[in-house]
Length: 356
Image 1 (cartoon, helix red, strand yellow):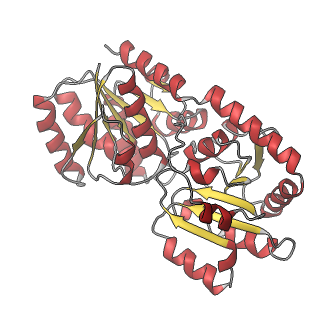
Image 2: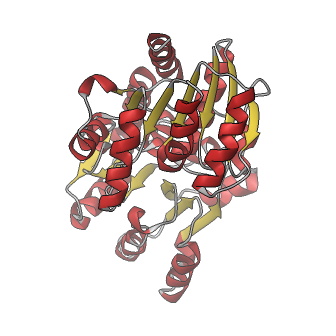
């Protein structure tokens, strides 16, 4: 099959990572895969040589749609698979005008959307041949918001791409571990992720244990403000923020626990990656988190905003190393069994064939 995958950027983010992982795995199965985006960033380095890269020359939705239409006039695909709102808007009209099969892939819950965003999504989703949701919670929200025919929708879970390339230098490993308890996070630095809660965690922990470090991987609009707040509270010694990291698995291997404090979450690729690296998971019980975390088995889901329970779980895992390791191994087994790349790739190819 000839497949065009469309995504906003190849800079950072879970949906973008999933688009890259899909492109690689589908190409490995012998498909002719092209990945289109308007901005090429570090994630492009993770694309396999078999995947063609097509740069859509504008971020503007209307201009990008026109450019994609011109591309589709001279390039025929069996499937156009678009990830998230920008790509869906850009691809639907050009795809339909050129008689392509168009699949949407929704990752987030879209609770930020205004009424006109919801109306737009409802209209363009009606034109799509299939709408893929990343988890059951995403399916429920899409059905409620967009009132689509259930036959048009399907749940295909996100997957985690095994990637153990690269290694931290012995100096960096020594700085991070050195007997310290490592609390990790990876993702965007934006308001939805509530990274300011890590400052509260640090302030509470420093009065009880001294040997800990909070490692925040990623980047975003709120990074500089977070750095100022850490400095203003005198907490620099407890934080390590290396920025966007391409090969995150090298850091996950240093984590003792992974904490995701988001107030809204779809289906977190970061939770999958951390769990695959045998790291116990802690997250608030929002979105699709409970579809990844089996409470008390591979991690803990916590009532939203319950900071006291969050602290109790972190400290318990700090003090019970044997249980922590057992929980990490359970996380690895669950992720490997339910959310593997091969399973998602098989599901996608089965879906694509059904639309031919």
